[in-house]
Image (cartoon, rainbow, N blue to C red; front, side, top):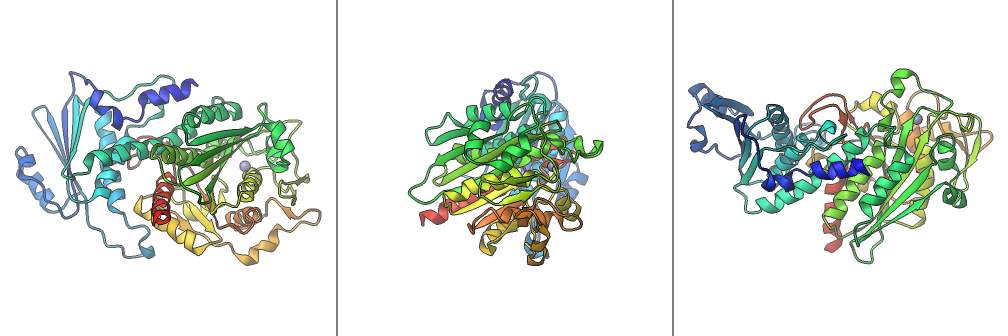
Length: 497
Ligand SMILES: [Zn+2]
């Protein structure tokens, strides 16, 4: 796939910087990142004016000046007191450094410098890791990958007072690239990323490794496997629905941790067609599966000592004579019947069948990621995914991982009193409810297919509306990749001890 080849040429940037030759024109850019509780080395300030020095003394987070052909940036990490919201929105050292460095670096890139250096002084490994992830994320732009790979090309040097700097840079390259991979998949337009090409891309990307095994279920196999809900959603599209399973075995004999991603490559809404404004950005309706792909990439590349299963439920929800209809009653893989109330509530249908496949293998837990409802954005906005879970312990771990990686989500309740709204007179349940609490009833629908396994569900937006922090443009956001990578890192440690 040309898209994937281009992508590999451009990224990850951090692991290629030693080979960059650079250009002759532009400014020499020197960045200094000062950690929490660290001091600005006097040597860096030789050309600074007294007012710049005063700003730094007052702990300004960013001070910049130009002297001759050199531009200086001093970034200072702040100590923040976690006052409220259980500390969940308090920027961690990782998040603060990532956002500070990322914000400045995307501006530096836009200025096309001759060379760039970043020097970190401080004692926090998380800070330096975050700063490097910020660099990697800030250099991603879809236009630099497709239709032609245009990697950044200026001489770059990154140093830190930490002994583990080299190792942390390598970790950051993998993590930043995993987030960027999820972003890139979302950014690919829906005429390029259709069910078939998506499956091929995942196959090509994940079958090269000895610890992974990729299995694809095409429509004929989905039929054989009784994946009625998944098939119904994809039956009007020109390309058939498919499920991809990437099995990763890096651990011992313990049960796997399963992930399921919603991969609707384009969502027209089906016969309950979306209005123009609601349909415009529906290429991102595979954002959950993109995040699962980013996470799988991270797991494979970091040779994580755990067993993981990644399921990608892929289909296009199209309008046609073959479309499934409101009123249809469809039998799921689990045997439960579903009355279709609204064909635009299709994500939960493809997820339900894949959740059944995942839970049949009795995993330790199953975590799904999906751009599931508009209701969650009404409640929480686009920056904060809603997290639903049947396990307080699992939810707590996921929330804390989100905080420490600046990939924050907020727990939402599986309100017991809302369950009855899913009742149907002709089937075991309806797929969708009218009225308030759409994100809650969507989660309650999914829960019916989790068979009591510890389960968490992320209802994500998967999108940045405008440039912000390390995001240079609007586009795919790779939500929850960083949170889940941290969570798995902790799990791998827990299972060792
Ligand atoms: Zn939909």
